[in-house]
Image 1 (cartoon, rainbow, N blue to C red):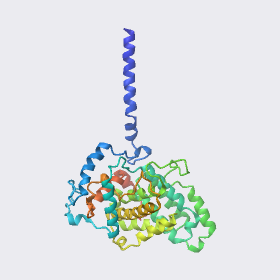
Image 2: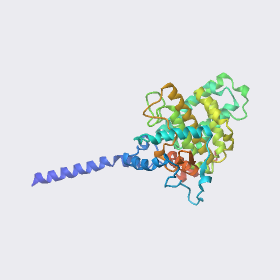
Image 3: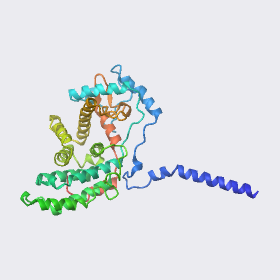
Image 4: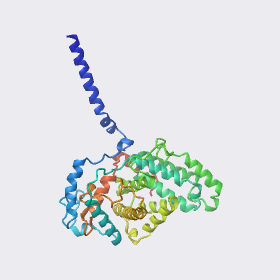
Length: 377
């Protein structure tokens, strides 16, 4: 009798232990983090095969003819549903042709088994690395232009970054700059010793907190394979921040991005290519945050298509990560109304960008920033 009771108690203990272990990941993911996603666990899971297969059967309809997808483009509550013509996003001719070719090729292939999401870990790491690169003394030789570019970049981070640690770090950087490098300081006073001391002191500030290690080999990316990928994810995440609607206009985000690329981006070839994109007439039409998010999406595809061509010519592409037009059809059924001819849904793309790159901030967190009296962008 005693042995039976011991066995029953042991069985119950094992069952309880198993349940606790099975739910440990859920407990960690649901922990209170002040309204902000943090840590490596916030990597989006890959799509399960059965979901990919179900989507693929509908995406295939894009290939043979111009039939539209059954699911309409997502719209905001209260918005009037746009007509097909009003909702179509007109792309540049060359980009439209390249995207059409690459998407038709992607749909003709087998459905992908790994469709990646966005990791806040990668966004934080890329932001911290960008700060590490921009504080070189040589970057401050332009004087007031460098200061203005740095303020605008940090101001965008402070208002729109998905990580509270990076936002807090941006406020600290701007406060320090205002103290040691006031706006009325003459460029003639910006001698080499001052630039060197400024860079040394900025090194002590941690853009995204001391938890984000930027030393090589210490803290690897999760989804991305390099810094540039993480930076693109950062741009997109900040472009769809909920605070942009009232706080940061599309024109301000464009100005911040242009200054960062022009003054602080280390890859000279990448910088030249991106500045070419920024110089196009379409850039001048960006006014709202939605305009900027859609422009950034299109510009990312311009860069991606150029890289895809270069990789094909050189044979340097990664078969495991082919450069298709973004998003891949299996990620967003409502983004492309047809592939031949290429018809892109503006509402579908914008809804996808907000969903894919959006990290929601709590209302109290946003209102606290508004009441802090910090300088606007």
